[in-house]
Every structure is written in structure tokens, then in C-alpha cells.
Image 1 (tube, rainbow, N blue to C red):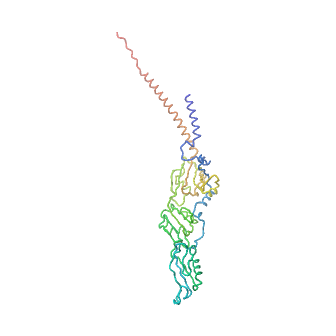
Image 2 (cartoon, rainbow, N blue to C red):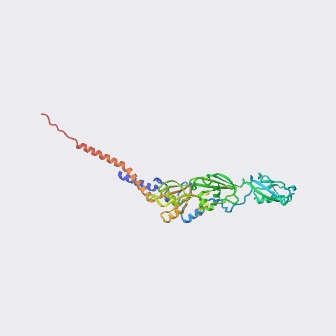
Image 3 (cartoon, helix red, strand yellow):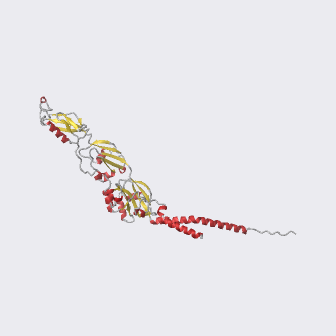
Length: 409
């Protein structure tokens, strides 16, 4: 009767264990079935979307990858340099003959009847001062526009005046390059036009390896950040700089994390200009042949709402601009390796590989054997003790000698 009760209890416990296997067995992450069922936190704190990796998905991600060119789509060439407050300018006035407003009669005929006014800065009102012309608006105007304004103000008093305005010191129309560069500095904007790589080169270039360097561009209150490699590998990101742009370079090694049934779990640096998913899996030691389900390679990443919608995700159940997405790559399909070789990793991506179903079954059987052994051990110990006691009692009886004493006569 005792043995029947023990077996019944073990059967009930085993059935309960099989039902709750996902929650009580040790594992490094969620089961692949839970991920595919989009089974999130029971309290619904963070829903996510599951997207299968295909060639179309890769094309969308490549086209919509976060780049400087997306935030600043202006592809026009260099604009005209315009005066700003603080710029130091030089004004030279020419007249056709002596006896004019600026050239006295007694000066006679001389080569070039002109006078150069003292250098002056554009004041806080945005003006410069020209004798007999008064305050001339300079802020926001080009050299040609300021010259014409001065001529219009003097033509009724001077002899066929002509004016040349030159920039002596350019302070308002400048570009700042800061951070991890050879010589952080502020440069006057070049009228011929310079791109991001040009001004970074003027500042001495990156001080650290390019693949660990990030470039942040700030313009008119907007910011965009991209890896330095994006400027080199994708010329569209190497846009023209504009006056008052601020370019900041900083070093932050790009990394990804690998969990689950990979060869090695851990935190890994890119250490390269570009890293694909296939290369990332290789860095983590590949898939563990004894544990991994090749069809259940998952990559965790947040994508902008616009990109998620292009990927076919129903974003109505998500709040906020970033949508949590899990990309599923099937490496049981030979074509999956081509997809993995084109899927570009991003900073802080998480790669998780689920265990195969057989592994979970093995864990269950091991657990059942452990339960049976745990219940069986006290019984075996009791039987062994009882047997030993019996053997000890029998041996004692066998060794007992009866001594008969004869009566003394």
C-alpha cells in the first residue's frame, strides 16, 4: 500500500511539473513558443511585436537606419555667407574723380580715388556705420547686398560711388568642432562649402579608432547622431555644414549582448566599422550544438514607430515613439545564413537563442528522476537498515554457544 501511494504521488507531481516546466526549470531565457506567441509580462507592462527576418525586412531597415541624412535632408550645396553680429568688416568707397564727397579737390588726379574706412564690427542691432550714409543694415545680408545698400545711400552726394565690402574677421558664420578630435576649435565657415568630414579633418580628425567614434550634429535646435563609419561608408550622410553648426565627436564602443544557447554568453564589442548578425553570432561562439534551436534566433531592438509600421506591425497597442520589436531569424533554412550576413547590427542589440524542445524534455526527465530518487532514498535507506538489523540479529543467534555442565559426583 505504501508503494502505491508513493507512485501515485510521484505521478501527480510529475504531471504538475510538466505543466509548469517553463516556470520551474532553470533556463537562460523564454521558450521559443512563448516568444512566437508574443507572450509578454502577465501584467502587460511591455508588449512587443514579432517580425520574421526576410529580404524585404532587411531592405526597409537599411533604408530607414538612423542616419544624419534623415534628420537633415537638405542636400543643397554651400549657401552664401551672410553677415552676423560680431563680424568685423572693412568698407572701401571709390569715387570717379577728385572733388567728391570723400576725395577732396586738392587731392588731384591719382590712381584710384578711394578711401578705406576703419574696420568695424557689426553691432548688436545688426548694423555698420558709414559716414554720410548712416546706419547700414548688415545682419543677414550678403556682401553684395551690403555694398549695394551703401551705394544707394551715397549716390546722391558722392561722385559715381562704388563700394567694396570685405570680411576682416568672420565671427558669426562659424562652425564648431568639439570632443574627441585632434584640435577642438571654431572655424570660419568656408564660402566654397565644406562637408562634415572636411571640418572634422580641419580639427585634426578623430583621436580614437573610427569604429568606436560617434558624430553628433546640432543645427538650429535639432540633433542627429550616427557612427563615424556612416559618414565614410554612406556618402549621403556626409552633408554640407552650415554656419553655426556644432559638430561633436565622442567615443563609445558599440556593443551587443548574447544570451541563451550561444557558444558564449556575454557582452561583445563590435570592433569593426560594420557588423552583421552572422558576424555577431560568430563572435559569440556560434550556436551551441547541444542546446540551440537554429530556427529560434531572436534579436531584440527598439524601432521608431514609422519603421515599425513599414514592417507591418500594428502599432495601435503601443504608446510612445519607440516600438519594442523581436526579429526572428530561422537558421534551419539555408537561406537564413544569407539573411544573417546582410542584417546589420546596431549598438546595444540583444541576441537570444532559445533551447530546442528536446532540451526542455531532457530537463523534465532529469527532474522526474531527481524527484523519484528523492522519494526513494528514504525508503531504500529504511529497507537497508532493516535488512542490516536482521542480518546482525541472525548472526548473533548463530554465534551463541550452549554450555552443558555435568553434575559433580
